[in-house]
Image (cartoon, rainbow over all chains, first blue to last red; front, side, top):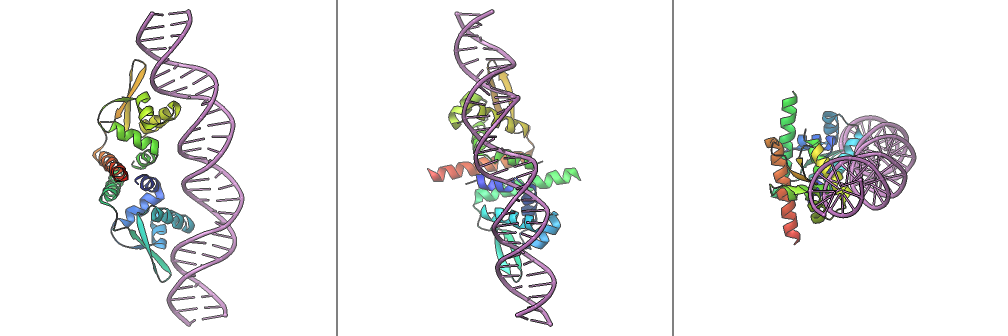
Length: 96
Length: 96
DNA sequence: GCTGAATATGCGCTTATGCGCATAAAGGAG
DNA sequence: CTCCTTTATGCGCATAAGCGCATATTCAGC
């Protein structure tokens, strides 16, 4: 279903987080919270929401938890994510 | 900004409504409410949200108000909308 | 085992969201 | 002017969402 996906993306903290993850790499919570400007608990909870929506996967690595975009997204959902990230990027560019 | 767009789309009633409008035509509130299965006030309010987000335009025609997808959406937003509608349609197809 | 860093979670609070109900407003028909 | 249809809106309510704070949990290093 696309609705939980949209709900998950419709939040500034989560949108920024998944935009950062869209470089294809893995990023831990502490890095995301620094770059997004969120507190620890807030960042953690938002990542849970993205995970629950199936948009991201996490992996324990020592004391860190590395998040990445779910590589097995359906083509349809993938297209939505790409379009959203592109639109977010364009908006940011024109604001700069 | 893409965030209000996503918030507007992240609701079942609104998503279904804009999916119906995505045939490119104009549709009045009474038709939308029937096809979506919503009460009148609910439908009216949801259409206001879509309008506020810039996704749709409305036009008074006698006692009806005809809604249509905003033809002047930026290409980026248009791409998001298309991807979302396509994903919603696919989900519906596989559920049938 | 102890300490510190990284992450998750329980709790209470505040605000936003969606709803129904009733009513107002706008316009056509007689 | 009156009545009917269509649409919008004020109001109150119930629930969801997001937040900070404190605390629990997990793991590495000593």
